[in-house]
Length: 431
Image (cartoon, rainbow, N blue to C red):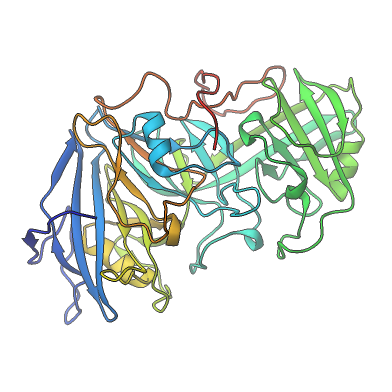
């Protein structure tokens, strides 16, 4: 972490910070002086204590009321791909960035929950039995942390509404760029999925990821509202202007009924439970609402942690990492993480991927590259599929932070329930 901790806390640690409960031990011990990275974006080091020992951490505070500041998803160039957080931040010109969702590590490497970048719906959530990461009471697999087109940060849920209409009628689609298509389901894959083989997405069951692959599988490619190829699920990047419909079991029978030359209409959107369309969405497990930690959070397993939170009015964000598995920092439990966030003044918070994935990077004023400010637990920073990037007027590059891939296709397909911005072709190699 490297920050010199200079400020000893009394009772106030941040915006809206509530006093500790009567007789309760404070989580925070010291909070360092603020370093301004850019207007509306600051960094502080922190130290906290726990029954097992010292924990060191870093927090970035983001003021979304500043019109020069915004947040977006960072990605390595495809959904099913990985890259270091620092590389993704450097490519997109972020002032600060943190790792994001849990993911299908060692297989497709695609994230578990929904994702939206630059207002574009990228993927929906896998079945509950196929999620990765620790179980959190009450958490739903389609839970997300979002920043809306209204520039308000919030915890939300994104539900996939999708269908394909063809010669045999209209059929529900239950997956969008997911590493696990539900049993008997139909899935959509777009060019944003990347090069990874799509056949493994039809393996396992909704409750057992190690179960055998579905015997019945089928796939068609659609371009300009017309089926142009039929066969089994393939690998390699889907060409621009096309999408793939895959099916397993009963879904395979529907897909197999489509023939080259058939006209089909594919529609999909990610519908926010709040009614506020997201500009950014990243999957995660909510651990605090209205300044109150979720009941039943684990208080036994210590690990490096990453989290993102928001103030009550949604106009301030916090990106937080806690070091763990280090000689000078033992890590935190989910319960301790939520207490710490509460003392920082956070109202609502989401647990992001932790352990070896936990990474926070910052760009010092005038610097051409970011630096890692936390102390990752692995021998080298883990490659991850996405994260949250913070952009300021002085740091943002000419291309979109989400714009390393092409997401355009024609014909009857509709990918955005709101206006779809133009997205440039891929920039640089994907990891």
